[in-house]
Length: 278
Ligand SMILES: NC(=O)c1ccc[n+]([C@@H]2O[C@H](COP(=O)([O-])OP(=O)(O)OC[C@H]3O[C@@H](n4cnc5c(N)ncnc54)[C@H](OP(=O)(O)O)[C@@H]3O)[C@@H](O)[C@H]2O)c1
Image (cartoon, rainbow, N blue to C red; front, top):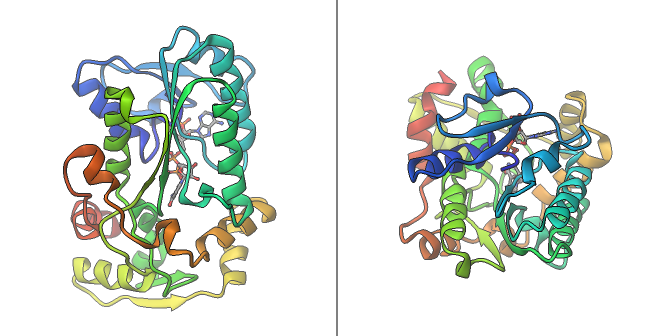
């Protein structure tokens, strides 16, 4: 597993371990990773030659999440190892932005990753999620410090999805290979704009929050100030501003169809995470 300590990977590892599997996972920092007992760690970085090989040699299936500006290079490295070791199945988290025709460089990177895994000959399943509910945690500093949420595209709805539901969808596909071999768009149950999500967070906290529809240039400056390359930020913001309802704007029955139960709501997610904003 690659990305096993992230938003989707962590609940997936828990689900695999709970059913007696012993997933082999890559992490750069096993102390921070807080691995579930039963998971086996390969310590290292995808930038280090040979790490993907150590992880994937002898594997029957691979679950892959890559993230950030280095993701395209990481996906090429992983796909080469998948081909080299004849890994038979790949479940890869990409994005609604990969839906053809792609509209921006963020979507193009995810689409290129999908093509790289398909070219290995492995049986590939792509989970293309809408925006994650867990992105709300990025509001932590401004909510705790200024009771304000700064976010661009404040009135653009997204059927935000709980990463735990993406993990359950992945678990289902890993359990039932006949469900794989295709791409799934994965959404939550209701379209919510950033402004509406702010109102829900305020209600959960029991205090007022101000929503500021931040100009995209301001968001761009804030993101590049964290060290992200400007071209990568351009792509991310273009993708976030995409009004195409097929790209996460409309709820789809994917989670229910794959897991047999409805997707978790944003209100549920807030109930589990509101303490992190106090
Ligand atoms: N956030 C959203 O709204 C959203 C929506 C749609 C699609 N997506 C896509 O979903 C994916 C997951 O994004 P996320 O932000 O939730 O990230 P994440 O999965 O929470 O975290 C990144 C994971 O990648 C691993 N990782 C990062 N760099 C690594 C490296 N150099 N070597 C080895 N492992 C490395 C980290 O492992 P360690 O730290 O343990 O090493 C961690 O497990 C991305 O492809 C993103 O584009 C996100």
